[in-house]
Length: 93
Image (cartoon, rainbow, N blue to C red; front, side, top):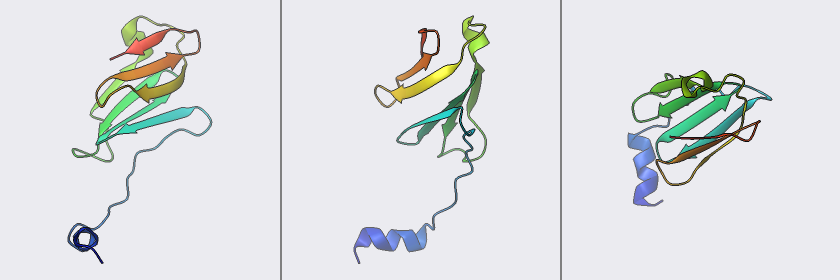
């Protein structure tokens, strides 16, 4: 048993309650940041703040895209997010 293994006794693991919609949802993780995209919703989570409520929620309409459907999400670095839409438009934040 290593010292790191003993930390799990002090800080027990808690179940994460971030939901990802089946068949239409995509998820990307980087450090404490989690992004969930589905249809036209984009949800940003910081698991250090909350594992249940998103820290920011956006819609593709916020970017002036009416019929945007997210197809993929990736982190370029820890803070640069790439979201690909069905029509080939990219959202960068």
